[in-house]
Length: 272
Length: 273
Image 1 (cartoon, rainbow over the protein chains, first blue to last red):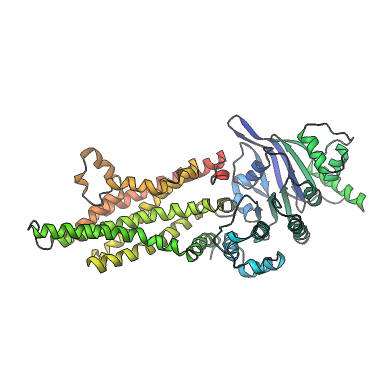
Image 2 (cartoon, rainbow over the protein chains, first blue to last red):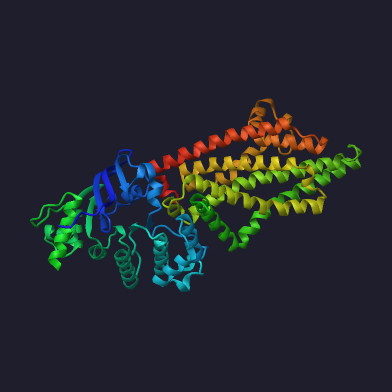
């Protein structure tokens, strides 16, 4: 059995309370380095709150988060320098050109030889023709590719993606997913992905964490969840969980990161 | 360049790039200070000539009055532009929905503030220099005639603008972008007590303590002394500097506490909404 990789993210009994509302309720999980965890759940399930706490934007009510070996409560900036984030709900300054925007973030993330890095990303993400255009004049697909370039400017070891392909046409969405797969294969980067696109989750994620009303309701590999719920695709599993239907399969849920890894290895061996 | 200096420069570069691409923004920087100088210059020239015509002033008194008034208008614009420079640069991040990207980058809050202060300084210089040139060309008043002490006056007013803007940023962090009107209105509310156009002694007794608590009132008392008698009031400058230090520390504490409160309440996530 292969040795378990060190965890890029460890979340221990995380809770976030706003007054009498529990947005995140005693959530624990870990993500081994180099893997992709899908964070799934309906609207208001606690995905964005969890990601915000991982990024240090929100202070948890209780619980502990360790990212890339750094305790987020004490040393979040050391972790932030080695990770990055992309969301279609954030924009880059519209009047600045793509190149200027990438330069800004190159400086913020301490990237050496920024212009060379921008040229690399432009070549890989097909942005060369867009570099000198104002970011505000780009199409939704072009903006997504630029946002992806921004999130990769520092060659992150951990990438947090909030619905990275929302509002993209199928072709552009597929290009983005392919690029993420390639980047992860080349860099060994860990990815945490929040998405409502179940096909995307099945394709990209090695592990899935299902949230409902702030609580973890299930977790496992995509294949493991399909087997447990006796379903053909994750969309049906998502609906079972969202509507509180009991699993129809026989497999109990795994409980630790090591068990998730073991389950994934067994899946891989089974596929082989 | 150290990591911290690079991050500060990175955010300053973002704003400089914005101004390079937007001449209306650049023009607006000089528009208000120049307009103020024009209005007050003609007003003071008119009154000075009427008083001289009526024989109500000693020879040269009109020029001194114009100098004191225009010098005060220019210096008050320094404080106003300094405050607006910080607040508007922060609001630019909210308007462009970029704040989330900044707050999840390694940019520390102290570095964010340092960059905003740097941008504010540059904006102030770009805004004030044309107004000072207009004052010299139209009214033959050279603000540099105040002497080297002018530098200390300007520094004190820049710093006052900065701590007021930290207060504005704290209100925005607490109440969201809906509180952005404070960026324009708060400093105007301070003007009656800042003794810009008249001495503190003109104010009613109960309001003088408000004026005394503001560094600006001490700067302008000092400016009037220099213009009228050529004497540097070091006591007023010392009071202005001490008050600025105290207010700056208080504003920095307020900003830091509101930033943390926004991370607890979730306001940092939804600040632009």
